Length: 530
Image 1 (cartoon, rainbow, N blue to C red):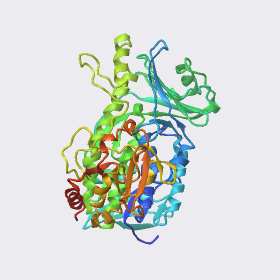
Image 2: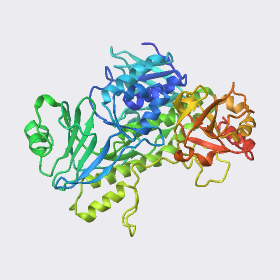
Image 3: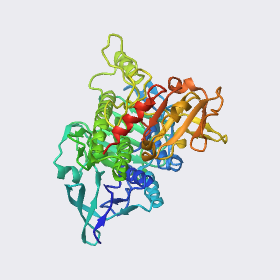
Image 4: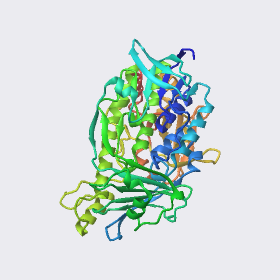
């Protein structure tokens, strides 16, 4: 193998690495994806794909194909030790445009994402290739790799994105410590086929004597998880007789219906740093979460969605390598918040005391996002929403309650001028978008005719309500117009009259109105200065 020169090196072909490579391919970045295994994983590890994950897959054109392989919109039920359901959480379509909870099989997802790379001539996947070491500085990263025949070669890149899992070689080479804790309680995880339970709910049996979890899976399968108790041998508890005994109150098991049975240890850890110069840690290389919120893999997809376009900006010369610092500034706190959320859900599933009526009510209050009278338990929404206070943002107006800067833009369904119904992101393309709301925003868009928008490959979009006429002062050859029904239902009414700059990861970088257009353009230009 000859030495290679590429713009980005992605290490690891799990879901995080595969999404990163697909995004970089969509942005036209020359990318090398290296993976030590011969193919993608054939193990059903992650099992929940959330609304944000599907939105990221939409950005690379794979959401529809992945969606055909998932169970959409399943909820969660919580049971007391007597088997009585005392709390239920639904899975509605969220502001991201997809159901909050969707069951999938990780091998199916990885195959689709791996095949998706075939669309991009600029992406080269190298399987059976070992990442040995690297050095970075002087504007480049140099990695030493070994191919399947034992031949060593070098890959020089502008950026290195480490998606190489919990035992990350890159993180170890950087000597970054994983801060946090590891739970002393192991769990046995069983994946099944031909399961008699077709209920579209995750079931959490909150029994202090032995917590148990049951989760739906596609293809008539299901996942079961139970805690290993003190004094029990974890490996012994994976044997069929033990599994049958522990889960006798749930179902019986035949050996041929068990796809996998493994022991898991749960971690709550975050790397002390996510970025070192031109090197970034993503997914399990950067953070490890307990599974009770189903956010381990999804957090990695959010990492990829956040960082890939920043690498593309750096490669294109619209930003320097320091743009990776904004990844750490934006993602660290949401990562911690999501881990804390998963830990809190784990305390529900693994109650240390009894599950009396007071405890049940407290759990219901937490799950429904309402505070307990007296403030003894803080409010907990179904999933924390990321809100960036610092990073790649361009605020020019004083923040107030309806300011979407640093937050994901809601993605309702809209209608194009041709009458086609689409999700809003489909109007943006893969890159940045200047999105005006209402006819009054047209004048603002016209004032934003600056070179910086060409550098950002901006798509211009105007959203009008069903009650408003199409604007007649806009050059429609350079702008898309879409209609939005029921504006108030999507939390966008306050945005009318404004223009928002929407990033490729669909977060709002900032906004302006007629009084601040020039100031806003200058702020964006400063953010892109190199």
